[in-house]
Image 1 (cartoon, rainbow, N blue to C red):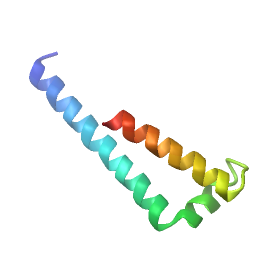
Image 2 (cartoon, rainbow, N blue to C red; image 1 turned 180 degrees about the vertical axis):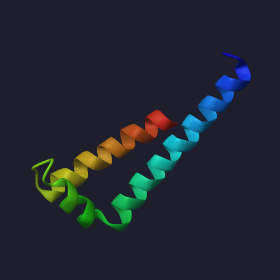
Image 3 (cartoon, one colour; image 1 turned 30 degrees about the vertical axis):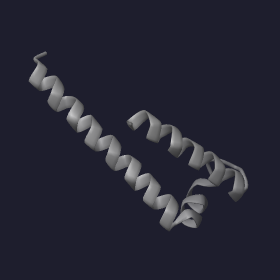
Image 4 (cartoon, helix red, strand yellow; image 1 turned 90 degrees about the vertical axis):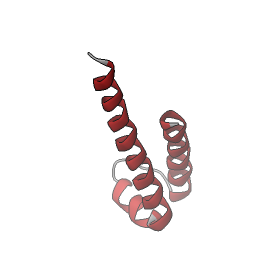
Length: 66
C-alpha cells in the first residue's frame, strides 16, 4: 500500500469517527430522554445510570478519536 493511499484511508477514518462522535454528543445533549427510551429495552437500568454509562462511553470514544 502506498503512503498516499494510507493517508487518504486514515483521513476518511478520522472524518467518519469525528462525525460519529459529534452525532452521539448532539443526540445525548438534545434528546437524552428519547435516547434512553429507545435503549432501555436493551440495557435495563434506570435513567441516571444510563446517562452515567453513556457519558463515560462518550468520553472514552472521544479519547480514542483524539
